Length: 494
Image (cartoon, rainbow, N blue to C red):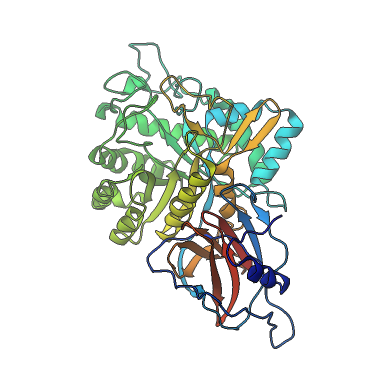
């Protein structure tokens, strides 16, 4: 694996010989980067008073793909020799939110292409994605659609009826149209039984809607009770399959009625449905699935705030979910600060087939992984896990440029940028980790965690345009490293 350093190459070669490895990093920006002297003092290789060295491991991905989640050779060594580099100081005594996990949406299309793999390829791929071994990336959170999303071949719900007919007692309810997703989830849960699953509908059954269409329209109030029963039947049916739904959102992107399928739902409508129907019905059925509101863009934090302002609705709500196709990631903190007793989640961001690897890596690490975490999110989910070479399957009118983390064609598997975006967190930051304080420094976007095993993890992205050397500092000691522009590094130490 080639190390990444582009300035003062002889100096960094000497640093490497001394046992100090160069690398990449990312973090949010709110302070100016300390100016680097032209001839900074070269740090020596220090030892602890006990005579043992304090080592740090380092995994790297670069925008030019010269490194793709590659563990870098050598070790980063903590010392105290001064230098002129800026420092990212990590303080484990200051803690923030507990992390539920990192992952993707397992769409119907994802399940379709994964299930089409040869049995041995499928088995090995699932182990790589959801296992925790040396070569695995440890996905710990999945989002699934309740019925079809736009990344299914065709739209459907679990209670479709002939035009003009209704089924208010839900006698025709069945989850069998999602058998491919269900059976795949069962396989995944044998690898990671602790996997968290969130369920989100793109639409209610069309006979419950005011336009009788899969696209747009609204849930008619006269069917609120029936739709709450639909949810109870769904959650119980999944539980009967051995699949626990940890959380639900009442509606995916409730302010976007142009997708196929889709359904609009105002904040007032969502609040009324939760407090009068969904919340009480789940409570009566003794279903512990969390209710998470909104599930749409960061440009409208007032939507979840207005729902949480209703004292009756508030008692049924765990938190709010966000996407970032509009607005600023800081909206998560806006809602958190208004209701600090409620959680926030980041549940979707797609990778476009029209954008390059380097630009996508840089933007998503800064905003989706680091940005969401630094703004109190308990998870970070990219959009589609897998698709075929034509960015399908998708519905007529569904997303045609959404690139999955994986492209599957026959038995060939291509790992795309989304894979590396999530893996830089999921592989190293296990569920139950706690975010800890790490200083923001110029273009060095970063976020830090302490894991349940006590190890510290720092994810850093160089959001600038040049190579940046820097220190990682803790308890009065530091290591020296560097990242090329747009590169990301994950650092782990005791």
